[in-house]
Amino acid sequence: MSGEIVFVGLGLHDETGLSLRGLEEAKTADTIFVELYTSFMPDFSIRRLEEICSKKLCMVSRRELEDENGKIILRAAEKGKAVLFVPGDPLIATTHIALRIHAEKTGIKTRIVHGASILSAVMGLSGLHSYKFGKSVTIPFPDQTFSETPYEVIAQNQMLKLHTLCLLDIIAEEKRYLGIRKSLEFLLAIEKKKKRRIITKDTLVVGIARAGSNEPKVKADSVNRLLEYDFGEPPYTLIFPSKLHFMEAEALIVFADAPERLRDEAE
Image 1 (cartoon, rainbow, N blue to C red):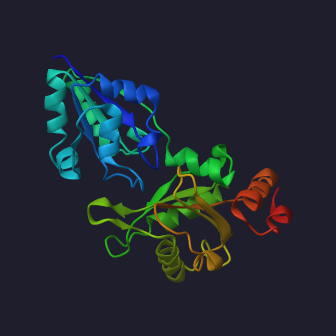
Image 2: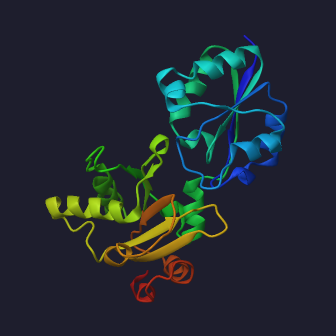
């Protein structure tokens, strides 16, 4: 079997996040697919991306990639080179790992062109050290799944003195994006039940909106204060810091308007 699938990252905000290498791959592709359900890119335009690539794009849904195991892409790759555009960094969304495994097992070559990831972007925006992050977690819509997993992950990371990155759920098909206030209220509701003082209204938290754009919003303060803070439009991310290094404390004060008392509390 000949052909290949190239997973190409689109970055975080709009089509200009596409790398030159990614563009070269698209220009030499026989078929180009794009999925937009695993993340939200606020200013992304399929029309503008088609103009950049000088080719038509085929939108693929969650059903086609997950329920149908990406058959539409695999069939295209059997005949030639297929490119799949993915928001962020392609294989950060574990959805696509199954497609890559299946392709390789059936003799279809795969390659990855990496793009900017929310994982690295929030570290750069906040100034928190990358090596001090523990396991990340997704906070779901409470009306969809009332899971205590986010609370438990934050608790585990705190015991290990590690920061926690919380990705906030999205349902792209319905244009629903979980907000920071709702996420914090959800965690406080679990705290009220657990009573372990993992997340209280005095807990330090960092909120980030629109990472990757020209005007991201980054704010660090107590949960109580962030409940009332206006972050503007989505997408959103939360970080629950553990014990801060003195340079991390300074970064949060300068970059995220954090309380200056953090200097005295850092190590």
